[in-house]
Image 1 (cartoon, rainbow, N blue to C red):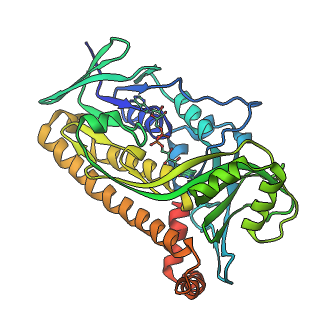
Image 2 (image 1 turned 180 degrees about the vertical axis):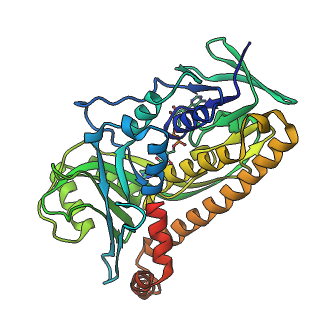
Length: 388
Ligand SMILES: Cc1cc2nc3c(=O)[nH]c(=O)nc-3n(C[C@H](O)[C@H](O)[C@H](O)COP(=O)(O)OP(=O)(O)OC[C@H]3O[C@@H](n4cnc5c(N)ncnc54)[C@H](O)[C@@H]3O)c2cc1C
């Protein structure tokens, strides 16, 4: 049986960043990915899944050496965010706090980030791909796992970073509360002739918001995340290109010149998910295994990176050896992260419900809402979510 300090199950964005961060802290790690680890090539077609990573988290990725491994011509910084409601005259613009950061964040394809993190792993980290945990024993101060390839490992901690449907979370019998938004997030790439530069755009409409995120400014390429009622999303997936382009133009509601669809379209069901606990004994949850939030402010990965930072603040080699210390540390992790995630997720839900439909009572609220937000510290909070 081989021995490591930490086993991480799931080598997506959060699992692979966690593996880099833990191994930089001198901990030995085994990273297990069920699929072949996601890759990207300079000339390959773009991953439809794109994430906005906040400026503070970009600084964290720089500190870990991951940022330099990103394909630099496939990322795009943005320093402004312009949000408006197409059913009123409310608008907000966020700008980077230039005293702290030179931008609000960067847009990147998910597989660019995964590949960069895998390429940053050092000798402290062993990896296995196309393999999963088959069985787990968690007795006393050890976790023992058997993998589907027959290998056996023991460790002091098992991190579940397996996304929403986590095998390890189910093994630990950690319950979840999942609330469907009855919406899908439709994603694709478009070209916009005259969009403002360095700016992420978001328009609210009856049905849901559309986020328009610059991914290659020189070529005028934008990624869209369009939240829609399920049936409408399915209709927009299947319609003719020209109809889709007209639909996107109408959903944006401002004249930024010609819009052209550049890619396939895909749609993902949107649900809010809370794990009722973030750890059990020596098993701990990170990223979407712990929480799922509405993508309207692009916070899923950012919250997951926050989980990693908090977890690695409270554990080290000596804490891992001591049952009581580890329990205290994981309780601290859970307390801090559950409150942060709840605050973010509930705020996203309030915005989602406020802007979702056209009920008369909500219309004036929305109009006043965006104008008031534009003037209040709440805007700073929102900008912080976008930019930290
Ligand atoms: C439409 C849409 C748009 C979004 N936009 C943004 C955005 O702009 N910004 C943002 O921050 N977030 C965004 N999100 C959320 C973001 O995509 C997720 O929060 C993020 O993917 C979570 O990363 P993760 O590594 O926790 O999970 P995942 O990305 O789901 O990765 C899990 C990994 O674990 C592997 N795995 C699963 N089961 C096992 C197993 N049993 N054993 C081993 N490996 C396993 C999987 O193969 C995968 O590689 C968006 C989400 C949606 C739906």
